[in-house]
Length: 141
Image 1 (cartoon, rainbow, N blue to C red):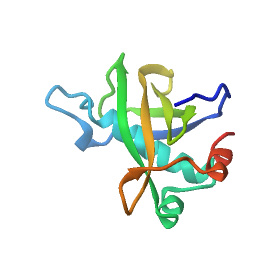
Image 2 (image 1 turned 90 degrees about the vertical axis):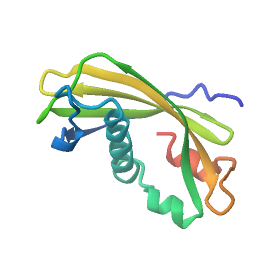
Image 3 (image 1 turned 90 degrees about the horizontal axis):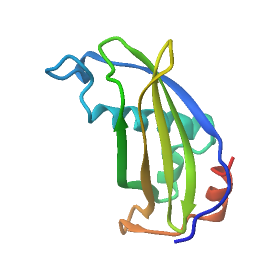
């Protein structure tokens, strides 16, 4: 799979730690950070790219996460607010890599960063399909 040398926009979404995000050690459980990325990404898809997950589903398409990598730096705690910054790093023939950063507000201290790889799938067959040119164009901002 070839990668595009393009540079893509990054978008920010503010979120807040919920009580059910906290683990026994009184900080956000490691699995919740990917939940924050997913929540921010859904908002950004609709607000910033103009094509929501619902729009993909109406076309019989969906995004399947094939890999994730999270670098934890500082924990988040109950009531903390954060900014989740996401952007496409590159496209492949049938997917993309989304890079992310989560910074605690108001100081914008890095809590974690990483990436998620996604495959675009046909919802009927659950098989990867090529990213259509119109979708690649819409998300290449």
